[in-house]
Image 1 (cartoon, rainbow over the protein chains, first blue to last red):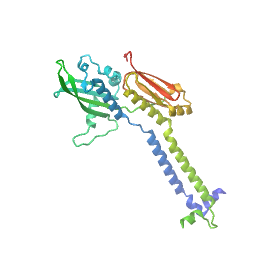
Image 2: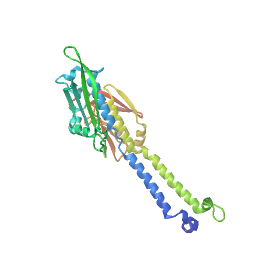
Image 3: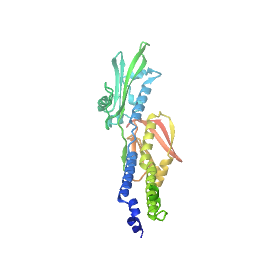
Image 4: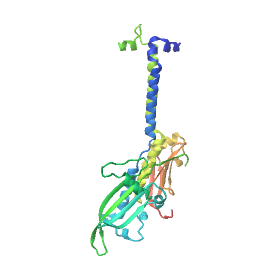
Length: 179
Length: 139
């Protein structure tokens, strides 16, 4: 009875056409698909991680714009001093840092942690002379800055040093099935 | 003209198929909206959010810091999915991972790069994290 009403009435045919069902299906699939894609996407926090790593390193090697004197000690361990997990930087390819300390444009000391490939990748990603930035899904997010710090030498004189710090993160996060 | 065709039949009343048409359309859009508004409250979204947020907080923390995070929504989702409170949140001190599991099917882990000893516990719906220096750095 209902079927006859819905399908066979002349006026009803205009409303309940196969095309209307198709329109509903397209709208439904479109919205559901869009929502699923949006909410299953990873939130990218690599830029924040690179920034935190940068600040952490700068904070632990300097104090009130002065480079800490122990940085030049032979047995200075930057991982221990900055509370960084050494094994994570050495064994896994998620984080990277490099510090070059310059005095009168000459390198005085250098530290690094993480895969060497990061430096090359950061060079590729870094803005080139034309101001174009290369973006790639699997390229790390890098932060490269120069800081001017002071240092008191053995004679008690104040010297000016330049610190080039490069930090990078390429951690995406991991879904797993069992704890 | 359109209005007359749509709402009125020859006798001037609303037709039965028109009512059915409206009810079905309404049902369709209500179900669609329910899905759209329910999607952001899913376990997958919250697992990732908590894991990343906590890992970033650990990296930004300094030794002897203590902080609390509201885990209310996470606990609600976990309870709904019948996950034991002890298994919701873990910190893997060996691999430096924050692990959050709010559903039976899967979980989410995110690494932090800081070398700290981290203790944690739930105080009702608050997750308390205590950051300390690692005493034995033999890892």
